[in-house]
Length: 393
Image (cartoon, rainbow, N blue to C red; front, side, top):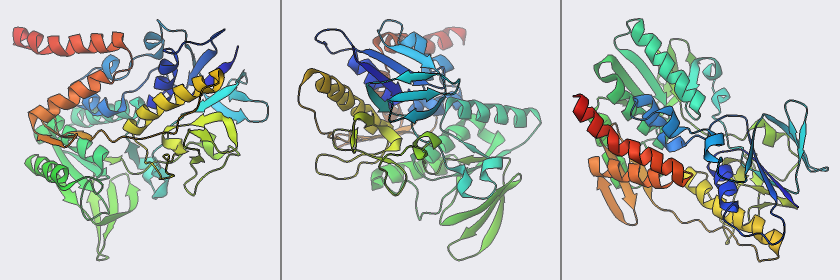
């Protein structure tokens, strides 16, 4: 019996494990072990709703034990300290090791707060459940202390920064002052004009200020030291500095003696196997993935979700003598929440704004929930909540 160890329980890791459950294995089914340092899977695109109070922790971050209860997948909550490539073992922080025949690396990435002086000490990243809880607690503390308004400086004008800015504006209302800072000339530089225009309109509607073409020189306890493209400097006072810029590979990957690109990501073949290591698959933020034509593919939840289909097939195919498939990425469009009542959606050539886009986003993410049991539970709660609110009102 083979042994497949999956390191990291994000979209790529969890869905690889769940997809492996669907296949019929001739002979004895291999053991599948999923290892993650956290107790919960995090549906990262819905973390914003946790901050705004629209959703609860169990909806956004269900426990791995609950999700895998009806499967043959084993879950182990542990910190991975290293990989013994020669002896094919995953080394754990408690000194034990898990042997593997095939390994799937999906440990994700981290927000590089160390790239600017003072950011590690004074800025809050927004990527994990712990990050969201830290932000919620910080805002509560400031409000309890009488801050009026709570001054939030949000670094990063990409999708994460824009969505978070709108959620915070709707959550804090007149108790908040939101500033979005980015070094680019415009927000959402990688998106089309329609989405950018809709986002700008929603930012303006909420009174969110923009400081574009602005470089962060340092982060301090009281705010940001900045410089514009015209070389004029300014200090931007803030009670909370949020950092949503960039992704870097974790230390686990940096320490591995595997082929990497200039950004430290593991080089993989179109089959998602690591170059020169066919027994190892690498997915998500830590992988320098390419498509069948050799073109680089960016990292996102949508990419990781699709990679999980291919990695599961290729793990199964390699064990059953079937041909492996080269990863093909299909962009399914873009979904953004813009506050608690609005959004923008670009799907299959269709572009929608406002409350309808917000609803489309919710439905799309509900359908992406990891198991049918969790989808049902969340869907029933979403359907019942408006009725209960009406009855209680």
